[in-house]
Amino acid sequence: MEFVQLDIAAIRQSDSQNNAYVLLLNETTGKRQLPIVIGWCEARSIAIALDGTEEPGRPLTHDLFKTFGDSFDITIQKIVIHTLIEGIFHAAFYCKHKVTGEEVAIDARTSDAIALAIRYSCPIFTYEDILARAGIIVNNAREEVEDVSSLDLEEDKTTEPQGIDTFSLAKLKKMLATAIEQEDYEKASEIRDEIKKRN
Image (cartoon, rainbow, N blue to C red; front, side, top):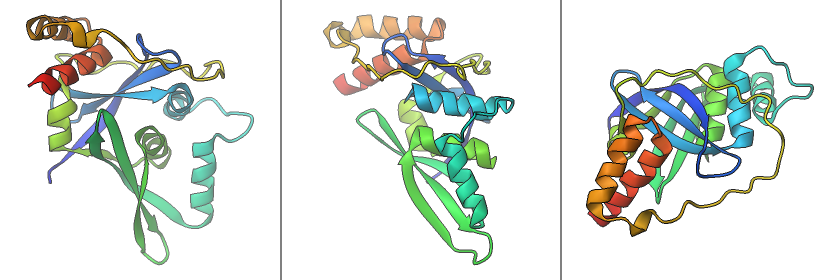
């Protein structure tokens, strides 16, 4: 299968889910963007690693993992978002022991894998078929990463958006165009999934 490399474009607070964020990944050589809904904790960890200026009082889980890996000569070479099932992305990170050369692929939540990719400065990939199914074409895909490093630590109260299945196909197509124009990529992703389900 053909790999497509991705870059982190932005992290935005979700409009439809409490304490959730949307991580936007751009393909490096095109105009498609992959929106992934992640929790506040992972969003904060990713934002802190991207910013690079904040030193938490105690190590975050992903920092602890890197310290552990460094202590035992393990590095991460790449992250691959390899599967999309019922709107959920699945990923793996590829580890290599620096001394023995042994390589192992370990399954992970996509948000955790990306948080580690930043800390190890390794590339993020997905497959062309996943990007073709879940990607959104945007005209100006480069955006700033929002500062979510000061998020309050609250319980996740995720709620599912409702009502999208009540609209006609024609209405959904108009809503999709509007969502993309307004750069509401999470909403566009939900509408696109509903259209594909009906087709």
